[in-house]
Length: 114
Image 1 (spheres, rainbow, N blue to C red):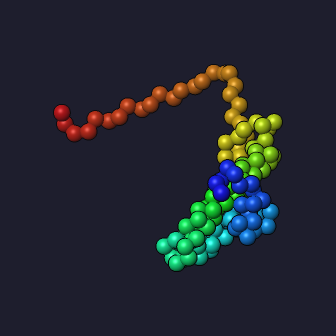
Image 2 (image 1 turned 180 degrees about the horizontal axis):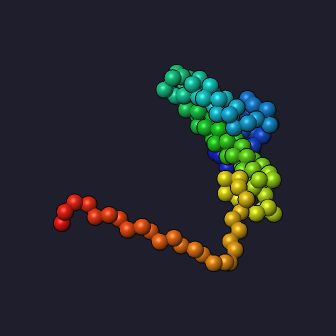
Image 3 (image 1 turned 30 degrees about the horizontal axis):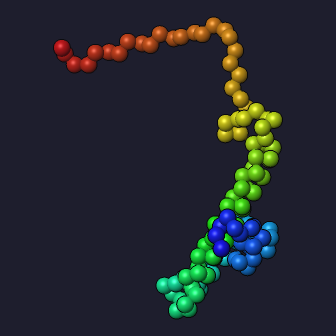
């Protein structure tokens, strides 16, 4: 079964996880199962097919978890499109028109004899 054919619920079921698993749980479940089903480590003749299915489930579940995290960040108040974007949590810079005063730079003393 490929990643496109597999739904999120099926992918999480293959990994043995509940429907509300975090990205950290998905990664740890995949690593644990990959050690058991990797074709180089498992002498079972179906190991390669199971490993391919496991990898497709991992990618599908992680892709979905990543999109959920991005969606949650986009909906949070800090990254809300209705709120002006700030840099490093600071208030936006307000530029005002007005006179600009420059101080002349003192001359640099000549060093050595010339």
